[in-house]
Length: 489
Image (cartoon, rainbow, N blue to C red; front, top):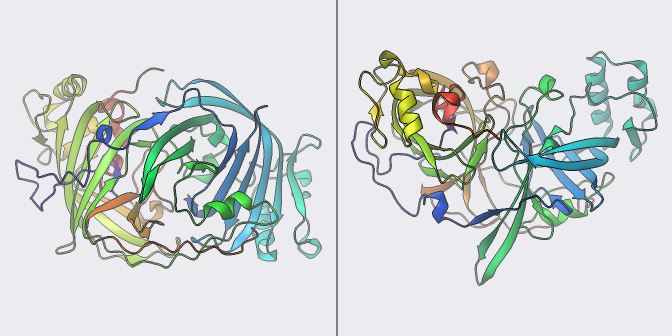
């Protein structure tokens, strides 16, 4: 997988052994030179926030979200679940009500704010008989008390459109754990805004709400406290344009889930260069950017992951360049519309970008990371001969089982989705650990051009201590495939 480490590739098709890299400025500018992003501190949550498209959570689960926060700290959240990756086949909807209180700046994830929340009510509406049976079967597979099981109707007594309470302050019992559901995403919050250029008009204000990431293992979601983010929600009042899904999601409720416009499947054409759209925040306090190049001929890939110590990606700590090969793809049997690939990482080079990282690498066992001799800031060293770099968690050679998908946004830009890393920091080095959800999309910046924009079809649908670089965070970084640990190939 092209993972956590900022993937900046060797551009111009040069081999890993080349001493110089040729950059194309239009492909990936330094983040600080891109569109200025302003964090809102303390975060202002008031107002409606919506998904801008179909989201994929580990499982896989396909959903859209619509959250509204009120000045008195109360909130109302809708989560709409679907049976397909285009969010056109609603299965059930959750209505969640509660209260959230912002606390303090996070000591773990820089740039985030910690929050406490309390749920007052969680209700579920089933949109099909089959959806009811699937949720009931999930409850039957867990140890739930009779009161919890009795909250859902018997299959023969189900009423379309009826709201069934899974949690209420007025009644005992809580079915949330049995269903693998939690709202711990509310415990980590970040709000940011930027001006987005608009063709033929002035720049447009876009506001984004980042909430905590969801554990890739359903059984751990009740206990997990986020250190990264999900795909952001955008303000219903200040969102990117065009956005065919935005109005549909904003107008929906638990009885009328949004049915998004049909997204035609696209073939997986990897040729070209794919780059992070901005600074990425991954679990375990990783800030990075990624840039990958795929060569269809010989099915080889190259990637560069650039890590930083701050959430704006302005203070680099180290860079990893990696290269290897990948297999011929096959359609995924678990995640419809995705392609399964196997990646091998065979070569890697590391460049410390600050004194702390260089000192940490110099103190490591020479045979475990790049051989004898001190490391110097800005000087790249090949770690292939030492089978990687133990201090950074890089192991060579390394194989990962990946999940890929290509999409096109409403403006016609090609996006590459690569599998999400396991939340426990391990590597998807067996078929059983292959991802079922995705990391932040990469933008195509070379190779196949830009396609026609997706038509804005509207369909009725119902509507602290500072994190450090080096060995302190790296064991999560690599098992590359894209330096798996590096940020996902």
